[in-house]
Length: 296
Picture 1: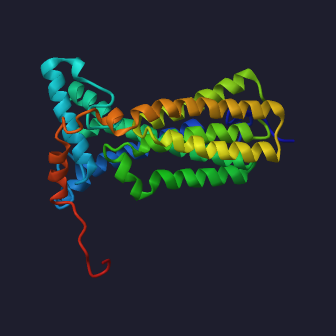
Picture 2: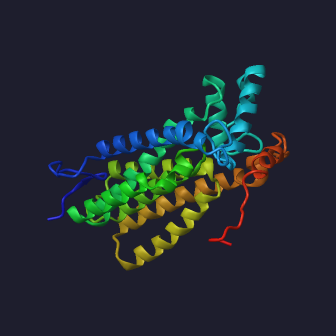
Picture 3: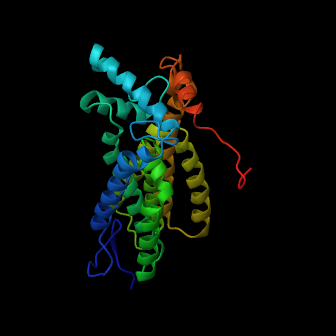
């Protein structure tokens, strides 16, 4: 008999596998420690890579400099200067500028947010395994995939800096988990479950939209194709109606984010207000591709 799910949490809690809460806490602790280690201990040892403040010589420095300038404006003119989408920047710079205005211009203040997003992404990957395969094999596969997602060193490039990738990833995974939950054989089409699924999907779309507005349209297209295939293959009328509602809600969000996702919508009429070119020039002078004897 297939066990029932309480929105992704197995009713049988006697498993030897870690609980979702424990897994998230361990992932958050690991990501926070590694990001802090990278910024405060590792990068200062490599002057050619270190742009100061624990940041690499890439967009992280651009985001930092822009956030510092906005924070200075807030100190001078007040919080009326703050915007979620500052002219010439995306929402991660808006959050950075608020943190800098409150706590000071140190990128380390951004680590808890990035670490939380990174750990949540790993948790959602862990959960995908339990949804796809209803056995210990699914739990083990999801657990191993989630651990790899957390510990791979390449991930430090986003959660160890002030980038927006961690938020975009967790937004996509939230929408994907909601979509997979609706396809799960143990899912019951009840109002409580419906609202939880839709809330998860909308949360993912909003989180994705505030950092990469155009990505919401991408997931709508993908889920629409999946809707057609799954509805034709095998589905009851109530599940088809729920999935159609899912697509319509995401499409409405995509239409809204598309309006602010254009160059003018996000960056404003004058994208050079924050002198982006100057920030980019500062980093590109030292950070550029050079051929080597191993890679041309």
